[in-house]
Image (cartoon, rainbow, N blue to C red; front, top):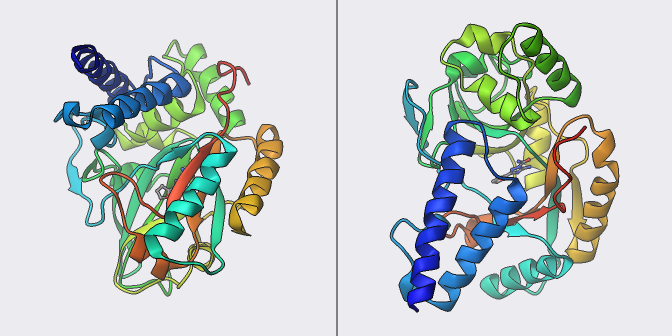
Length: 320
Ligand SMILES: NC(=O)n1nc(-c2ccco2)nc1N
């Protein structure tokens, strides 16, 4: 018990430091794999000793402290993180948990979406006009990066035929080619270079000066939504198609799959193409396709019950 309590304290401190470096300073100190391992260790000890769970437990926090200097925006609909799966049997478990939660025996369709390794962004359109853009922050409050988002070509300033209120959520990312060119420019100018495209994207979006963001090659894939004055569709796959029709980039590798075997097949198909995409992905996100079932499944404290991120094995240090 005493040993478990001490280890939980050490893990909370170490994960807290890693969060600060990754989310607030955009300069991670440990690899994603090591971070995931710390989180899993913490969850395992909490499962074994539930009454030792700390008030500041890393398993009940999303993101990290907001950086200074940005206005704050409260998300009408919380921006969540995703539960991770690492092994094939975790996918069958995912379906089993859904079936038992819903008491549902029928066929279950999912979307399998490449998990873009960037930073999430929420775009609020009112009357088809981009009014606000906010980072995820801690899931409840994000940083106001509206003027920065306006400089990203993939993000439309106005939409036609959009619902009166539409929040589009997706990932800001940088391609490998743009990342290499940016680092070369930074080096030539005696400026700091970035460790990997995710840091470069986060460091470029979270600039207090939008002119700096404007000079950075940022891209955006839309994959979800937040507040809506009218539903986009009745299924995840149709909602993504609707975002595409509205003018957003959506990922062409997203597929509709029935059951764990089909999900694993798509996971392997996406992993096989990973090296040729030209941008970083770190897994595949499986989501229940039927939005009525998503609503019935709802959320846990920080993650939806209707989605899971099946991570790829950690790659060698960023070497591309
Ligand atoms: N990162 C990424 O590509 N994501 N993230 C989600 C997500 C996060 C929470 C709900 O959905 N979906 C996709 N494709």
